[in-house]
Amino acid sequence: MALNRLNCNSIKNMSQFKLSGIKNKFYSLYRLICPEIPKGKLREFSKKYGLLNTTNQCDTLAVIIPCYKHSNYLQKCLESVANQTQLPNQIIIVNDASPDNTSEIISEFITSHLQLKVLSIFNDTNLGQCASINKAISQTDADLYMILNDDDYLLPYACSVQLEVFRENPFIHLSGASAFHFSNDDHIATSPPPSFPSYHTSYHTPKECWVL
Image 1 (cartoon, rainbow, N blue to C red):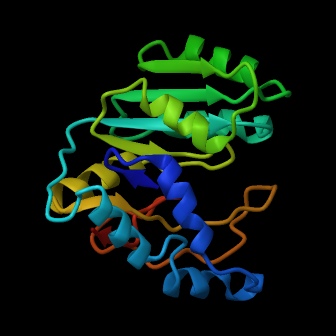
Image 2 (tube, one colour):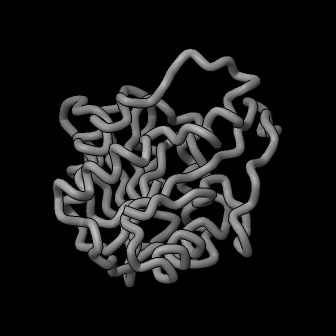
């Protein structure tokens, strides 16, 4: 998910309106028809906070990675950000008091990627994903935030695609994403989603953008 200076607590609350109980084999079709956050709720949110008919500004991008109990995937997640064709202006990693070796992985990544602007935040207690994301947002002045879970990866064009979509569509404030689902041995477990027109497909690619 990429968003243009929105409050993630509100985004989390809106996600409660998603439907449930769909069998796995119908999941891809279900997501295509029913996005996780319904467009009506997004429009209601944008109207409440004065986002309708306003334009975005997307010169800078921060990738925010909340971390909790996914150390097995974290290194690959971080490397996928470091390997972007267009690097983000800032990477903010929030260790939400994870009990595994997340701290060590983050430290090693920062040490081996001194060319990147990385901010590491450690929560003394587990605050939850949404609070961790908002904590990261308070530490950056980037125009655009990309939220990346610590057990997900980005394909190389993800950051450039997000920036291009927002720049070419100035009335967009939030973009959704499709995902390839991988098994534990890194094989694709489900079919790739339809490609966003004229863009390279990425693990998190804005297949659908909601115009607020």
